[in-house]
Structures are given as C-alpha cells and as structure tokens.
Amino acid sequence: MSPVRWLVAFAPLAIAGHSVAADGDIAWEHRHTQRAVTLTANPLGAASRTAFYTARGFTEAAIRPYAQACGFSFGMQNGGAATLVTRLTDWRAIDRDGRSISLLLPQAWDAEWDKAGVTRAARIAFRWAQFQSENVFAPGDWIMGMATLEAMPAGPFRLVARYQDEMGIHEIVLDRLDCVRD
Image (tube, rainbow, N blue to C red; front, top):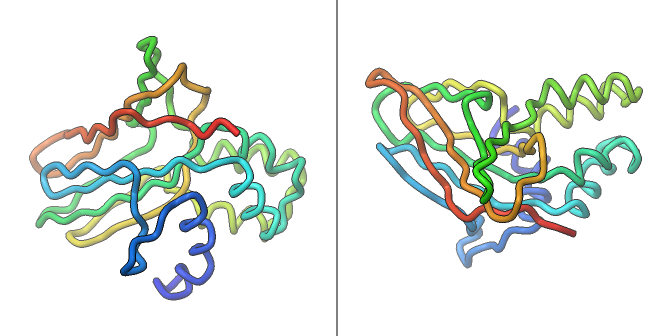
C-alpha cells in the first residue's frame, strides 16, 4: 500500500486519541530516541478502536475483546545508517508490581477472528493496521501500527522494546505508559 493510500485509510485512527500539532503531525505522548532509533506510543481507548474496526467490517461483539485490551498506537523509525530488526515477541511491559507482560501478536488476534467468523476483508484491514510482529528497517524506514498487551498491567508501566542491528541487541524504554481505562 502506498504511503498516501495508507494515510487515507488509517489517518482517522492515527489521529483518534492523539493531539495534532499545528503542522499536522501527530503529537506523540511518549517518545524516546536511542542510537538514531525512535519509538513513539499513544494509548488508544476502546471507543476509538471499536469505531475504527466496525467501519471496516467487524461487529461490535467480535472486536470487543481487542477494544477492551490495553492498546497503543506505536511508531518506530530507523534514523541510523544500519538495517535493524525488531520482533514484538522481544518487547515487554513491566508493571508497577514488577510483572512482565508480553504483547499479544497480530497472529493470535487473527486466529480469534477466524474462530469468530470475521470476514476476510475485515481481517485484512485488521492486519494492515497492526504493528507487525517482525519488522526489518532499512535506514530511514518507519512503521506505525496498533498493538495490545496480553494482560492489563497494574497501573502505569514501562515498555522495553528490543531491536537488533549489526552491533547487537539494544533496548528502547518508554516509561510511565498507562492504558486508557474507559
């Protein structure tokens, strides 16, 4: 999908729950750059996710578990000169009680949609809007997409996002993230 078509298709959700700066860019609530790699995050509420996905063919009942999960819109950009790889299986939320919580991969949600009889078109729209399970970023590449945690954290949490480049494994940490509790 071209960047222009992507923006037209997904801009309503990208902006929902985010503030927009005067120049039209999304004002990310959480942002950290390390080694020329930037990770951004904004919490997403149930209402915005429900509206987004019902407009793409989901029933409210089918999308409810996803909408009620702790969800975020994430952005990641490789501003460096080397290729990097990130896998959601390597990311963890650490809640205030020290509990480690994994992200629920898009494939797990897709298996649920298959069992629930969600249409193929709606499932494709879902996949396109997710932060992919594995990403390879050439210099200058970026991605934006949604992801959810496997469980609701106790209060604000820290997100530890790992990625790998030719120098090894690195972590970007976003502190004081919190789920929208609506």
